[in-house]
Image 1 (cartoon, rainbow, N blue to C red):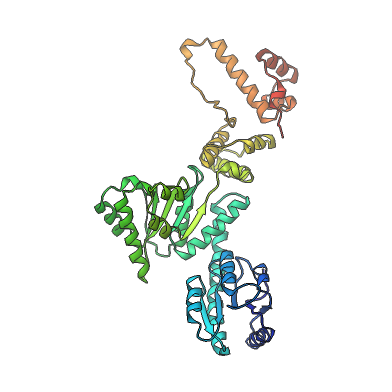
Image 2: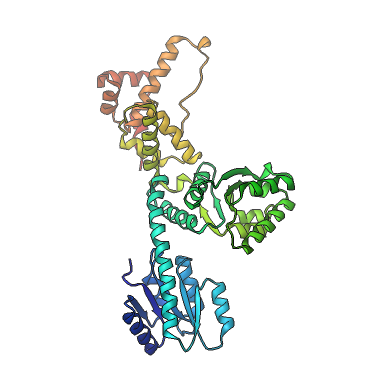
Length: 421
């Protein structure tokens, strides 16, 4: 974390010296930079400080620096310093996210008052965000860089109470994130959340009834593009009217299974509605793109299932986890949870293979059923221990020589179960 609370950026050394002297008198820790291109390297999304930047600098314009700072964290307060009478420039900066502006020559007490105001607000915001992030870690499982970023986004969006768009494949946890954002962001105990599909809303009366019933709660709306075009336009106007009011508003969280931009191009999604709702964006990658999360998720659901069934937590061989890691997981987290739940009751489901199948017992001789079951048990054990016959024999509680004979009988080759890569 940066050990200063105010970042001062100006290409005039005399001005910087004056600012720094003012900060020292006010007992505010500051850092002064002549080169604006170095500014962003000195702050982070968790920085609890305020930036004071000049609009006219040769190496980098103040407007470009403002955008760069806001890209790190849109909530970092930025006070811009403009030339005397340059109000249009100041107004444009405020539109792009500046918290305040002052004209030269600067009134030191006025600058100090603005800094203290925004610094206090920023420190409260960062502390709330940290507390939320700690809570979110218990709800969003995974240690990958992608999930760290998502945790940070959820914490930020919960505090801002903005509309949100969540995209990703089915089964990645989009609705879980939506409900978490609602729960963390609602400070009214009676705030409600309802879940709808776009194709469930067919009339204007239905839409108005839903909007009036939710009040200051949250609507989690899937397949928004399936709402008829007139209803999408009506919802847009409703949200725009709320934007103009200062009172609390209905939050809309849109769930999309594909890129919303393509839906706009295909004229399925009203552009103004999408850009209004996408005040916050979370893209949840599929499980196959974040293998570092697979073991954590498997252990989490396994522990959860064992606790529910009052069963002891079984050991999990590292080679089995390695095999889970290499699986493509077309069903994403939903599929992984199913595998963990089966493991909790003693069924080792081989990733990528459907080991649970029905046989017509009446038409299958008992000896064949027994042979099939024995072969399956041996294959599962070899799979679990990556082809290590000794470990598989101990797991099946049979002598190693006997296991080799059974493997020969069923045509099972241990090399087919050894881990690769």
